[in-house]
Length: 253
Picture 1: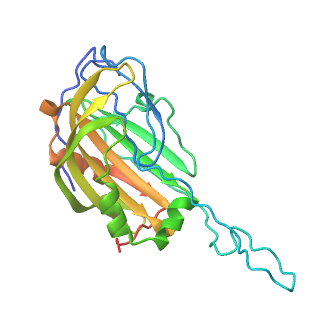
Picture 2 (picture 1 turned 120 degrees about the horizontal axis):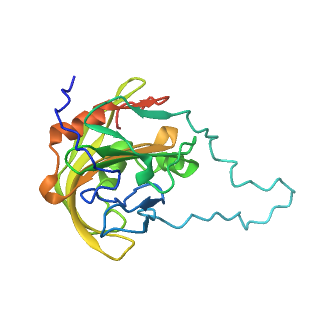
């Protein structure tokens, strides 16, 4: 079991400390984040990364002498139902829940977004969960192992000069119903553009896993000022304290 780090809570530090970053990335959802700090006022609208045009389907033009029912768009699709998932973090002391970092925190069957403020290093952690039919349909396109390792390397929205500093590396740290939820992690550096037009350099860690058979993705990231990047041990403590209930991810295949 990870050992939580000692820290000192600083009196007078509000939820929007000048040291804190307003973070703007999301692999799977378009969200707007509040911007904290004197140089990051305003809002940061986040667009989906890797958005693709929806595939269109057409019916056959071959004439038939015998009238037959027109195939529906979903006749060949397997019915999908979103799993009943809840996400919590059981850690205390080093970080705490602070959803006002997000302009629109969500907690539905298809979208969950949560934010956490680290008390010491001036870092923020964000959790994004998404469930939908299109993710479920991607099970036909390849295994979760390849899909997850590729998607975690995509440049984050509102980021430029994105560079991986480590990974992608397999990691099993996030608890789910069957034990731990395998996924991939990377370390990275980037420059973030905020809604105010200002930019800032950041460094961080990112976790991603797609579970196509259940139609869900889970992304977790922790982002800091480059000279205040928290340790990999603290990052892994945060992952291992994030519990996903109602999901049995299974091995990446």
